[in-house]
Amino acid sequence: MTKKKIGTWNGVPVYTDFLPIGTRRTRQRLVSGKPRFAVFHDTGNRDSTAQQNVNYYRNTYNIDWSRTASAHVFVDDKECIICIPVTEKAWHVLYDTPIDNQWYNDDANDIAFGVEGCYFSNRSRTFKSLDNTCRIMAALCNSWEINPRNEMTGHQQIQYDKQDPGNLLAAAGYDRNDIAVLDNLVIKHMKGDSPIPKVAKNEKKVVKGKPPRTVWAWNGIFTSSKNNMEPIVDRRAMGLDKAQVDRGSWIYPGEFVKFDQVIKDKINSLWWIRFKYQAVGANKKDNFFMAIAEITDKEEKLLKEKELWGEIVLK
Image (tube, rainbow, N blue to C red; front, side, top):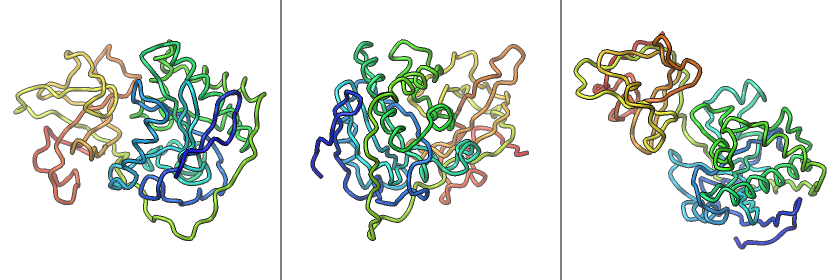
């Protein structure tokens, strides 16, 4: 596919640069036919441009299903690039998160499009990117008759192990949870352009499949083994690259937490749990995450693992 300018929406140059057909872009149509809601993302990759993100997807267009992810649109401080038509499926929200189903009666990947905003070390550049992303989101909401007040959500609002678009907000100088900043800007820019909506062709040849299940809404208690030589590191999101909490809040041998989610981390071959602290005076509002074992079972089933870093009791 070649990059092609298709217009300027609310002052932002817009291009198509469609991905090759593979696991990232399968050509599967949204089950709703047209988008019913929108998800606001950021790239999670500071100082990368829209084109660099699209290029990465292109270079890994047929990545293994267990690691695949994708989005429809990338926006930075200079341009917008559509790499998957918004009426096709992209893999931008985990299928296993229940909140999108509760709010919109279906999975985001099947009925919604995702827009990714880039962010930078330079705050003024980030703010321009944030504003551009809101301009593009506004144009798309106009086109598809999506009400941003109740039909646009941040990724972190429907998938609690995510921190986007909080990274974009924080890099622009806002509170990372102040989604209202984005809501208000999108609504402001909806007074502008409304591009003609285009529905992707109903292709006969599509790649069948979707990302495998990696999250389970299990409730239980995890108790760290008294034989552990070190405390288990707690983090503010799932992933070895995510921010750690202070060492005093790590889970020491013999301590326990109540969890409500189990996550299979295929990239790092780890099992994680999502939990809230129980101690008096602790932060009981936010969710935290910690790894509890390496994935070693041949069937990749947590309850068959023999080397857990503690004991799990399910409710």
